[in-house]
Length: 44
Image 1: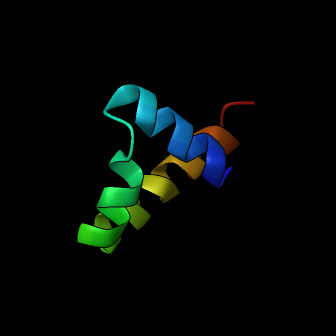
Image 2: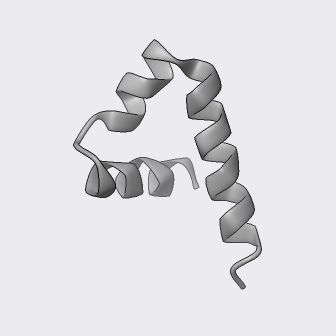
């Protein structure tokens, strides 16, 4: 799931967005990743 999240954010924003965010603002990264996981788990 982590790799899927990285790939999605690379496509939506720019390559390296998630990695940059994880370094610069880990709390926001974790929040966005958790939102992604919650959305995915309710999708099916």
